[in-house]
Length: 362
Image 1 (cartoon, rainbow, N blue to C red):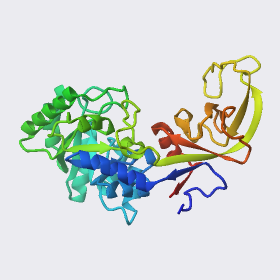
Image 2 (cartoon, rainbow, N blue to C red):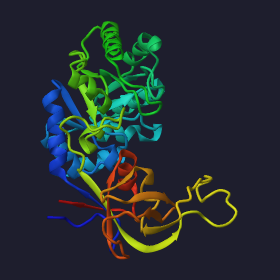
Image 3 (cartoon, helix red, strand yellow):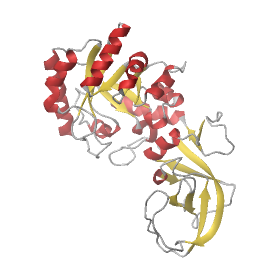
Image 4 (tube, rainbow, N blue to C red):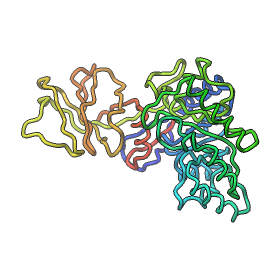
C-alpha cells in the first residue's frame, strides 16, 4: 500500500520507496561484515522509513551529515538507535550536537574545544570519532599531525575520544585498497598507543570499502563501517557497478509528460550559454519525437536519471523541464502519461532534498 506523499501536490513528481529492498540490502552487508554496521541516511534526507529499514536489516546505528536529519530521527517514535553525525559541525551547532547526537565525527580542534565546553555545561562527556585524511583530501587531520592533535583533544574536558575514522572517494575519487586499509589500521594503532587505551570505533570506510570486505581484503581490525549507497542503490560508489547479490530498485521516480511533439533534433539560432552557464553541443539526428516531463534540475540531478522503459533517452534539462527522446520507445507516449526513472546517487539525494518532489512508500 502506498502512503500519502510528503508533499501535498497533485501529480507532483514522486519518489517511491521500497523499504523491503532496503532491508534486504542492509542484511547483505551485515551478513558479510563482522563488525558494527552504521546506516547512512544523508542521501535520503534522514527519511525515518529508510532508517528503520536499515536497522531492521542489521544496522546498529544511523549516521547523517545534517543535524536536522538526525533531529528528525530522534523525534520519530519507532526509530530507536544511536545517532552519529558525519560532518564536523558548524560552531553555531555545537550545543545542539551535544543535545541531539550520540557520537560525532570531528576533525578541527577548535570545534572540538567548543563541543567539550558545551558538553561540560550539560555535565556530560560527548563521544567523538577523529577523522584522519588518508588521501582523498576532504575532511580529516593529516597522519603526521596525529599524535599532536590527540594530545590536544585529550586535554579537553567534556570530550571522550572513542574512535578513528577514514574516508575516501567522495571528493577526488580515491579508491580504497588493501594497502590503504592496512595503513588505516596502523594509524589507529598509533592513536591507541598515544592515548593509552583501545578505541572501539575503528571506522574504516563507507560503501566503497565493501568490495574489500567481500573479497576478504578488509583487515579484521576494522570494526565499523558507514554504509549508505550500497544499501540505498545496491552499487559500489567507486565503480558505479552493482554489488553482487544486491538489489537496485529501492527507489523509482515518476514524472508526468506535459508535452510530446516531433521536433528537429538541433536548435535553430545563435547558440551561447544555456540557463546554467553551459554551452551545449547537439548531434543532428533529424526530426525526433521529444517528450517533456514536469521535472528539472531544481528537482533532481538530471544526469542521474535512468529511464526504466527501453527506448527513452534523457536529452537535457532546464530548471523545470526535462526533455526526452522517445522516438524508439516501444509504445507511443502522450501528454498525461507517467515516465518512471531509476536514480543514481546524485539524483536520489537532490530528489529527497527538493520541496517539489513527493515521497511515497510501498
